[in-house]
Length: 201
Image (tube, rainbow, N blue to C red; front, side):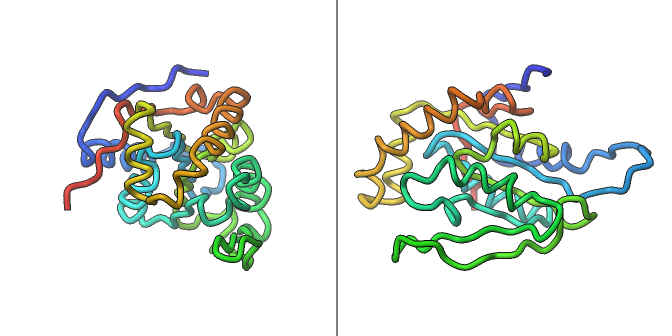
């Protein structure tokens, strides 16, 4: 596998433009029916995945799926990662079972608008655990966002408040177990250093 391209701190606009160009680059005349592009965005909690996904999706005309919508609770990173290849990216009846965080139980089934083998709108999937080996095999572009631990925690708590604070260590252990097994950073096409700098509004 080729070494991922490492991007030292760049502006949000530069990063978004680069990714859009990569996704839209012609694949050539392979004689194979086109399918919708799939972009995976991963990184540890607080690195900027959610902000990046929200900024990228409209530029691609893409459907955005945040894994927060389907993790089965605070111990659900692995299950959320598996759901990507088991149901979200399957060829027939793609979709996912949501998670009702308030009731702490499974929610409704959410069908996705098209199968992965169809020529439909792009799909951007962001979240911890998005970039496993099984998921990468079904995607067109994979991005890993790096940020130091102190700043990640500051961002995450500022974003989610004290709701997240009691779960920080538990979630971090799941991230570490996943990263040790899947090595998502090495699977990425692009590695963004210094976190995602939110787009100026």
